Image 1 (cartoon, rainbow, N blue to C red):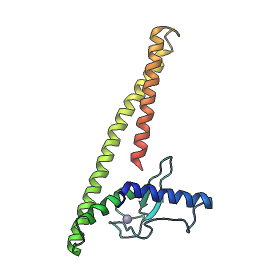
Image 2 (cartoon, rainbow, N blue to C red; image 1 turned 180 degrees about the vertical axis):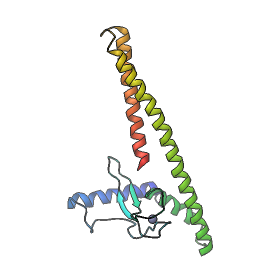
Image 3 (cartoon, rainbow, N blue to C red; image 1 turned 90 degrees about the horizontal axis):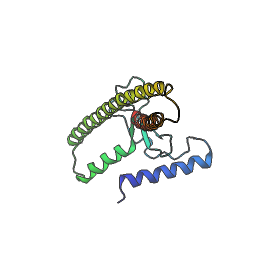
Image 4 (spheres, rainbow, N blue to C red; image 1 turned 120 degrees about the vertical axis):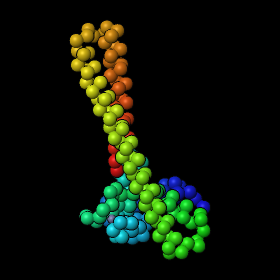
Length: 177
Ligand SMILES: [Zn+2]
């Protein structure tokens, strides 16, 4: 049995091959899980597509306008992890047990989403502070003589802060998907 992560890699590779060959996304493209994943909230089928970026993840997305789902998309990996844990407990689920399990998963996913949002907010706070410090230092540095040790130290610090800020920005972007 392959792990959820390996499987995800495999399907993304397959997806990439299909899109590259055709040059554009058509109905005929390979979408694993298409019409197999329904939104827990509105019960409609979810869209399946990979995210853009250097390392794409496969996502299921709810396209229902009035759906009360707070986070519109979910990584397929999360669905796979759920399935793996579901089946690892055997196949003797009654419908009632299955529903209970589904409710539990719903709560877990909501919590996970909240946690991610909280992390995002924290990071945004740190980023704001960093941006403020970068601005302050940049304003001060113009009054310092170039090539002086203080100037160089400040310049170095500004570059470090900028690198830190851009890595935070990336983190925030990733979590917002
Ligand atoms: Zn929905």
